[in-house]
Length: 288
Ligand SMILES: [Fe+2]
Image (tube, rainbow, N blue to C red; front, side):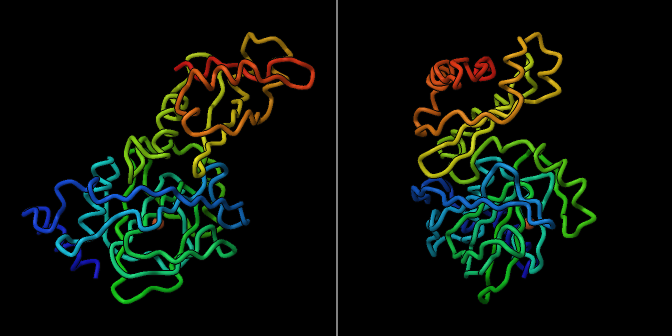
């Protein structure tokens, strides 16, 4: 099927036949379902970011090739290196890149998170966004089950399946840069709102600073600050600051529209105090 689909894709790209002019016009507004998985000893999963699934998020009219709809949609949001195929029927993950699956045809039962993970039925029109490290395997699929996969521009493809992959993967997964655009909603989706801030915060810090990580879940974003210890250690900060910032600091769960507003985050951080009344956060990391 993959070869036939590859031929179709080349022909459609050359002619524009059955490809959408405006893939954004085919979107429905959907909140993502978020699933978190722990390291199960074989599959690391991602230490912070959840698997996101948008159900029935894309309309697939008969006049268009459904695979071409997903390709155009993902490419419009700069997720490329696309393929048309199924999902491997053995558990695997990618340790240096995130992956998106758009279901173009049929339905399949896919287990995410490893052998002890969650089985989700994906149907035509659904999208799954898999952060690096998320285990996935197809357990069952209907006839003609067809998936379009794609990748953000940051990261390099690899495929991990066994214990021998773990050591390197445990290092590379948390280092994989966040995507700069949501593969579905681009700049306007919940992932994008978080990503825009992530992109700024994870660029090389100009001063000893925090690595700010935003997790997203429906209407809320959990804001965490993980201090990069080796950056903080040589910093000319007072000892109490170093002590306070020596571990993960959970500061708040904020409504999405607040998180979208960096000054509001900074204001919240400035007023957030620990039991002793000392400020718990150094706010300059959010200024760039
Ligand atoms: Fe994959």
